[in-house]
Length: 124
Image 1 (cartoon, rainbow, N blue to C red):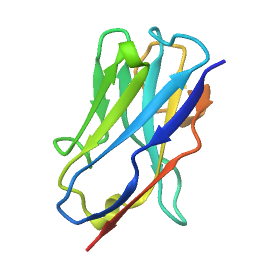
Image 2 (cartoon, rainbow, N blue to C red):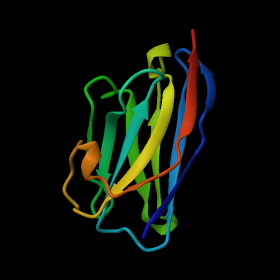
Image 3 (cartoon, rainbow, N blue to C red):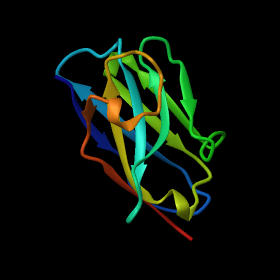
């Protein structure tokens, strides 16, 4: 079992930056992939980015590519999502999720473990 806890959400003005964190506990997850998803009110939960904890391979949803950066600190069992040039449409609850497959993908249903989410609000 892996437990995931997100933190770092908050309120930021448009154009600003925020970094959210996903701390894992329970077992080492160096062979996992960790994804970030987000869900805005009334919308489906959507993929944002994912990273392979073993070697740092990453990919991004087109709408955040170039603005968001996903990274990991294996010593801290933590994955980060650095978000720059934030816009009001980035407002959502951000969730991290872990998958044991070590294969990068965006398929929400294939992730095994989920955190409780952290709210990110971008004001215009």
